[in-house]
Image 1 (spheres, rainbow, N blue to C red):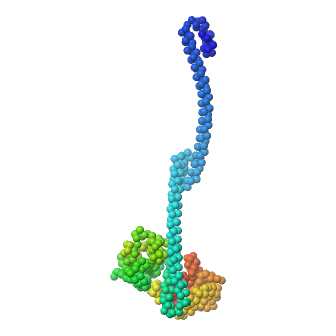
Image 2: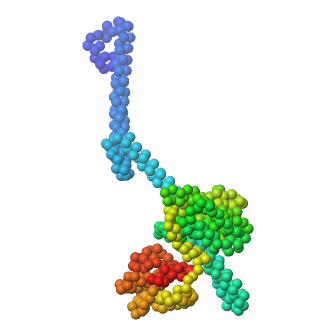
Length: 505
């Protein structure tokens, strides 16, 4: 048996305990030795492989461990950053607990995402509303431009014609058209001013005794001529038990009723407009009553019911083109009724007409001391004011001449001053019953002039006759001592009414 091929450890043992001869004489022993030798060799090979494998595993483990450690450090870093970010987002100042409380953190993060999503939704909705409002205002400005330019065109054109024509018949005809055009323009401007005043919260509801039945009848009479232009008739129906003497703001109630009747006239051709006063009940000196204005006109589509009460809006754009109007009438009506503690309601059917109505709850004037409401309407009769001394402080020569000519019809004595400084000098040198004061003038304006006059006279009535319709300017005027104001272009009847208040001052 060749021992050189044996494993070194096995060879050492055989050399120590068994001779070669003994081994050669026992064939079975040789087979056993060969099997043991193979086991030694296999073990050594396995040990080598295990050692190599161990070395490889240690390397891979080290690399993997390094990677895991790196990932863990990154996770801790980003978690820390996330916690800091969530703390900054936690606008409500909610207690977060420990930084590793991920459920709380995720809840806050989710809540913050919902808040941001809601803000974004509201932002989109606001943008959509702003765009819609902008479109409505653009349409309103287009309509307003048309409404203003139409009477101005008639006025300018007729002035040219009157310069060329000398016929008395033509003169009177043109005067009627001029008056109608100027009145339309005046009402349009008043509507705009009323709307601005209501929007600014500058309308106060007066508490004046008046007769509502007389008021409604006067309004109906004043609008009969306008109704006849469309071949319409106006009828007033009043409950036999209706209580007429009330306490409220007759001017604003008149404005509401006039707007509703004017609307009915505008949208009705060869029809009928009916005003009804219905007594609902009376309780503890409070009268509850219903006012209806019914027409047989074009009617309103139910889908457009809400839009007619939105500012700068009419039921259809083509409506304004066909019938005119700015879309402010019903808006003003609704807002005035809200100030009176009521609201506008209506029923309508296309082609059959509309009924607008509202209910008021007003104190009853038990003394029946109602004011004469003639001074609130178109049929107001101007009174002669002979001997009334008026100081007119106005820098515009044309406005001065117009005011002088108008007041001369009432036999008013008018003295003029072209600016506030001259006005103060004339006031100090002469005696007047009333001062008509423009606010915007050179040298010294109406504000400073009023302040100077009030230093020596707290009682003389000063009426601002001004084109400054901004409520900031008007409020300032009232604060410094101006009693009241008239907005240009002014209605001569309004001027007569205000001057009459001080006729026997």
